Image (cartoon, rainbow, N blue to C red; front, side, top):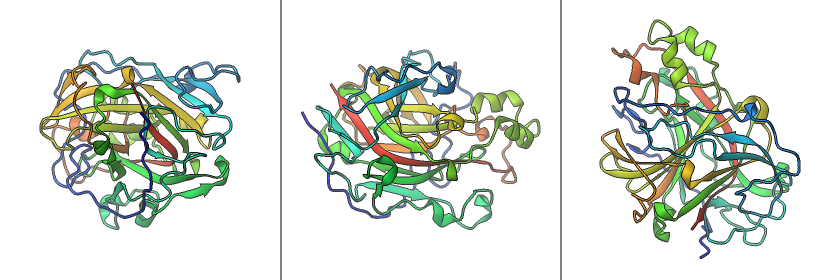
Length: 356
C-alpha cells in the first residue's frame, strides 16, 4: 500500500480557534495536561549527552535507502500519567548524503516530501498555516518583524540538500501566556482522505535542519531571572523548560477540544550541537503518547485503544519541554507578566508516516 501526498500548491490560511494546539484566540488554556493534574514527568535525554555511534552506523528503523549516522536517542518529553511511551527510542541521525537517492518507502504516507523518482509537494496548498504575530505590544520581544514569520508560499530548491525541494519556517512558542501560545505553526488534513488509523502507525520520519540564523532559545538562567521568584519558583521553570529546541507533532481525530483522540510526540534537538545539519528523526509508534482530549484534560490511552480511530490531520509547532506555559503554574495571572519566546528556524525535507 503506497500512500503519498502529491501536488500541493500555496495559500495562506489563518486558523482561528485552533484547539488542538491552544493556538486560538481567547482563553484556550493549553494543549498539555492542566497544572493541577497529578503527572509524573518523563525524563528528557539530550542527544548531545549520548555517545555518538560510529560513522558507519545506520538507524535501526531508518525506512529509506539514504545513509545516516546515528547521533543519539531522545525521549518524548510530554508528561504521562504512568503509561509507558517507549522513552529513549526516538533516534536522531545525521543524513550523510542529503537529497540524493531519496526513495518513497513502501507502505508510507507523506505530509510533505520530495523524492527523486516522484517529485512531490512543490507548492503547499494542502498545508494550512497561521501567524498571530503583529506589531502590537504582545509581540514586542520577538526577534524579527512580523512578516518574517509568514509561512512560505512554495517550496524552494535547497543547495544544502543536493537540490531537493524543501520549505523553511520559524516556529514560535510563548513561554508565559497560553493565549495564542503557538504563535506560528502549520497543519495538514490530507490524512483523512487516506483512511489511516492510529493503529496503522509504525513510525514517523522527519527530515529537517535547525537553522542557527533565526533560532532563539532562552536559557534556563535567563528564564529564572525573568520569572523566579516573582511569578513562579525556579523549580517550576526547570519542570517546564530545558533550553533546547522542542518540536511537537500532534495527530488528531477531530481537532476539537471535546472528546478528541490524539497522538503526540514532543522531541528535543540540542541546537548547540545539531544546528545547520540535516537530521533524520525516526519516531517509533511506541514512543508516541496516545490520549483522549476533553476540555483540555487528558485521559491516557494506548495505540491499541485507538487502533480503529481514523486520523484527520496533523499539527506541527514549537513547544516547551512540558508542552504548556508558565501560566499553568501562576496562581493569579496578570497581563503585565513579561513574555518570552522560543523561536525555531527549521527547514523540512520530509514528514512521513510509515505504516503497518
